[in-house]
Amino acid sequence: MFSLSDFEQFAQQSLSSDAWSYYSSGAGLQQTMKDNEAAFLRYRLRPRVLRDVSAADTRTSILGNTIDFPVCVGVTAMHKLAHDDGELATARGIVMNQITATKYKTCMVLGSFSTTAMEEVAEAGSPGLQWLQLYIFRDRELTRSLITQAERVGFKAIVLTVDQPVIGPDSYKSASLPPHISFPDIGLSGPINKEKVRNLIDSSVTWEEVDWVKGLTKLPVVLKGILTAEDAVEAVRHGVQGIIVSNHGGRQLDGVLASIDALGEVVRAVEGRVEVYMDGGVRRGTDVLKALAMGARAVFIGRPVLWGLAYKGQEGVGRVLEILREELKSAMVLSGVSRVTDIKAELLVH
Image (cartoon, rainbow, N blue to C red):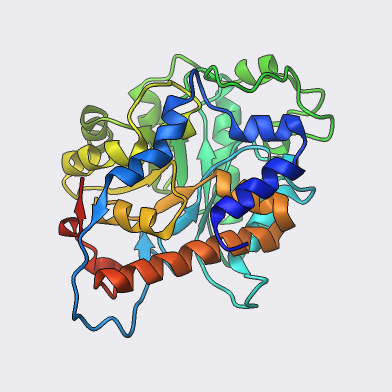
């Protein structure tokens, strides 16, 4: 396994047809899902030469927490479709690279629809950095209890998904989930179908609920699913600490901007008042470098982590991250930058 595309090919061949369909599906014609990757190819790097890059350093920080490189594990649901150990393997793969037997630290966002209990994932991922992704459920007490539990087990931020008032019309056609799939943190067990999941999420949510969530916790609140300057400014006005520029992996509204194309607009709108991250289509170290040059503090990856799980569980996850870290380091050196803080906008041209 030398590139993320190797993991994708393995996953397509080894996963069940239903699992592959779920992980690989997108909304409508899937133009946004495909463009998330293709859009990176429309940007070119402008490397500088004759600079001392002998001590390249990929470390950075997010919300005050140091991470070893600016590639984090974004939220994806149902890891047990890819591997029996599910989110436990993901959490372990982040904090221990089985290939090199070295530890490194980055961030994992655990989804509300995790197939493993939050407390178990927190223990498996220690001493890594973990955030909880949250939906506003119709049952407000369920929403409140997830925040309380996240604080109790040591998670460091709440990631509120704001681009899914309803579950989008992705191309995943299966009516029900396999019998071994359950969502212990929200108390949902089999048999589970799409309608059960749809009925959980509240489509009446507004900016008032952002204020409500902020009032429930002292943890930083990050909004995931912002694509416009207008919403970015509104997010700042409501006091959030971070924004993830995201189109939900192309699974919600088809025909919207690729995440990398929306990133610059959001970065300019917030004017440094909050940290900005992005997800969607990151497949190479040069993709990471381009996102950082455009102003992202870090990037989050989704599907590649699932491909790594399908390959060899925690070892596969660790290998996916290691490939991206090495590719990013190489891209930095060849571009004439030795630290993440040296990555500037002039490195990039559309």
